[in-house]
Length: 112
Length: 114
Image (cartoon, rainbow over all chains, first blue to last red; front, top):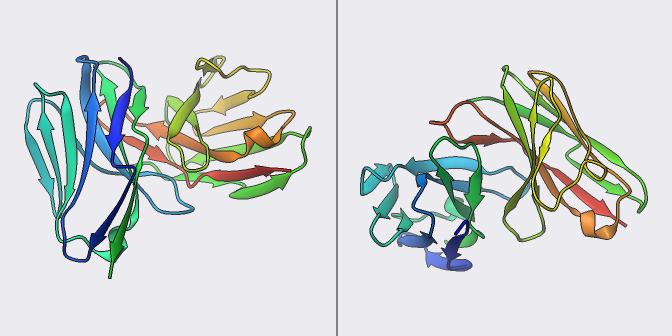
């Protein structure tokens, strides 16, 4: 119940295309769902996050879609650029807790 | 968000030795976290470090192997003791400034044990 399943493990997208990464969770107590972006040699950086009271959140080219009934959420990167090439982690956190459960990561490569 | 300085950024160590990793934050934080990221893997929480109290370790991690110090609200150290090649990982320091904020991570320490 504490797992967050992330797919795909790796993704190759053409420049200008849409990158989609999916995550699924079991624990209905989770109420905060962030996405992190990690470049080689760097620590993960918070990209965007959502709470389950909304179904979608958009920040620039990055959108989180959230399906509470299906217990799934996804990251969409519109107009993907080579600079978006990185590893992306989804995570989930429960109400009142500081602990995150991270997904297994998706290595994205955007071809120029 | 907080700015975290972590050092060393990388090290190559002999098995059986110990390495201490330092984490400095530019603001006072109650809780600091230490994560391990094995090659190509996700992030695993090692322990939570509160100032003035013993660190709280996650299942699979013990104080004898990963002693942590937290002498004040801006600094912490993680020691990887009696290292073996299986300890080769990236070790990350992190802080969270409140329940509504995401974690901020340091750049990590890439440890290779030979």
